[in-house]
Every structure is written in C-alpha cells, then in structure tokens.
Length: 466
Image: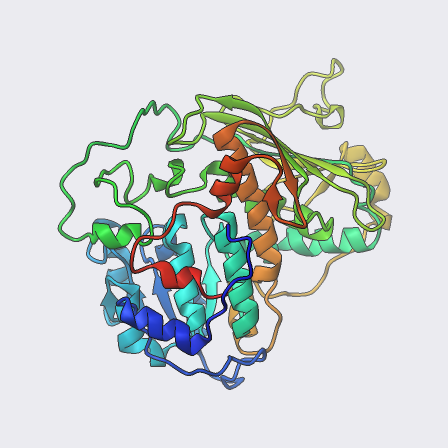
C-alpha cells in the first residue's frame, strides 16, 4: 500500500487516462455529482447491470420486480453463456455487451445507476468506472477483493458523492430494525463476545490442489482475458468459471467474504466495532496458498469504544467445525443438557447479562433460553410499520427520498474486517493490526496482501482515483 501522499487526479484527468488505456466513459462531465441526486424525484430509475448470470440473474429479476426501474443495458464477459440464458430470455429487448467499458461508451448517457454482480476480483474496476462516470452503484458483497480496493472505493464515493449500497440485503431486513431498536433501548449492551458461524458445505470442500488447473479450451462465448480484469491471466478451467472462483484466494473471499456480511453486519454497525487490533487464525484445516481451508476458526479483538467494552469476535466455517453451543441454547426438553440440533449458519452474542441467538440475512435475534425472552417480552421495543427492502431502499436513495442503509462508509469497514480475516486464513497465526494506520504491525507479507498484486497494464488508472 502506498504510504506516501497520494496523487489525486481530477475526474477529467482520470477519464482522459482511462480513455488512453482503452477505457471508455460516455459522460465526461468534470463536475461532481451532488449528494442529493440531480435526477427528478419522479419516474423510474434507469439501471444497467454488470453480471447477469447466477446472482446477477437474481438481482436483475429482483430489481425489475420492484416496478421502480427501467432496465437499460446488460454486460457480462460470458454474455451468451449458459448461465446468462435465463436473463436474456426474460428480457430479450435489453441491449447486451461483453465489455462494461463499451456499455458505458454506447449507453452511459441513458442510465443513472449500475448494479454490480461480477466475481469479487472485478468488483473494484467496474465499480470505480461507474463512480468516475457519476453513476450510483449497488455492489454485491463483499465490496471488493482487497483491503486497499475498499479504501479507494470509499474515498471515490465520498469524493464524487454518488449513492452507494452493498448487497448485504439483510441490512434492510427485520434484523436491522430490531438490532437497531434493541441497541438504542439498552437491551443489547455490554457485549464482550460474538460467535459467528457458517457450517454449510462450500464448493471447494474436498479439493486438494497444488497449483492452478492446467487449462481447458476457453468457451467461445467467454472473454477470458477480460474476466481477469486487472489480475494476471491463468488458464481457463471450469474450476474457475462460472461458479467456483470463490474458493480461490486469487479471485474470491471464501465463506467469510460470502457470508460474513450477512451474519456480522448489524453487530459490526450497532456495536461500532470498526477495525480490529488483532486477527488470529486459531484453526486452518487443509490450508494452502491457493484455495481456502476446509475449515477455519478465526478470532478478532476489537478495542473498547466510547462506553462499550472490548469485544472478541469468533468466526467458524467448515462442515464439522461447529462453534461451542452455550448452555442457554440446549434443548429445553432435555433434562440432561443434551446438545440441541444446531443451526448451520448464524451467531451468538454474549452481553452483560443476556445471551442472544441469531441467524443470517434478515433473521431476528432471540434471547435464550426462551423462558428468559418470554419473561422480558413487555420490556422489548416493538418495530412496526412497513419499511423499504434493500433494493427499493437503494432506488429511493438514488431519488433522494431515503438514505441508503448500507452505503460504502458503512459497508466498507465491515468488508475490510472480513478481508483482514481472509489474510489470516491465508497466512495463519496471530496478526497485530493498527486500526489508525491501517497496517499490520511487523508483517510485510500481510501488508502486501492488503494491497494485492499490481494491476495489469491498462488497468492502473482505476487505482489512481481517490
């Protein structure tokens, strides 16, 4: 990571450099986009999509179902691939492109927002391009692939004042509203430990690799060079595209990057955790430098904040790597304290005199044991009334009618916590971190991973806009 004073090119300079490198933007307006969007507070929002297969297909359908958007353009490096066929069949009249830069050049003056659902390693370039063109952006979690990329995206979003939202959709669900209300009412207080777990099987479970796949013929529909974007190009393999890239450190962020934002987001936000001072890999089964472990236990230490005590956060992933189950969660029907059937994904929160159990996404908290919650029912704040969901919230925020609930200034630090955990998964051991300097202490390799490999020629401009 650059520790000197960064050079901050203007938006016009960035776009000029991007054009020289073959990066197109159809809206070279030099002025900043106002905080309150300049689009009228009426009519549908014009939206383009980067990535229209798998999760991207889900987002296209979800945004379309709101009735609040016009679908203006699609782009996907495998535009005619099998995994994009459903989207193309459902919306045959929407123009499609393989290269997001060409989409911006051709139709950038016709859409106001971009939804990004490409693999983790290309979130950054696509999103930075959109921000530089003055577009609002909805980006799937995790926000970016490296700690520094998140830092740059937060800076760019603040500088260009666009509306942003990360796709941890539970952050607009019942869990968000309940956690917020319970924290403000003092129900969730004096938290000292959070235990998060994701014990569902992952695609890379069972893999044994000692190198990248030797390579298979590249599908005729796929631009394999563009799929890599700023990263070095490895031979094509179905173990990388279209669904298994998440298990490789080079391209994805594993179970923690995928599910951590769905499980830890409200605790991170409403407990004001910020960045940790220690990240420790307590367990790594089948660890190597290419793919994620078969099972991981991580421990994060967060310092005291305001009037709140220090917090330990634990992360468990792997099919059999179950977290310790608190006594409060044992089956009430058992008089022998037998272990209740565990849920695979969720969290326990240990507060001063209460223990909470939660799930993922929008799942609400329960005080355990159940008798304790029933006894406290009259003291628990109620959350009533309809609220916009995560997707509608983004649309309305682009129209200046709501505030985005998971903007980059909120979702960025959460993502950075997860990415620090990924570095610990990769390196192992105990890593000390300086939250103010945003550097590891005494570990050069860990600091290199904060930044990641240097971008390929032609992609450097994205890393110069701050």
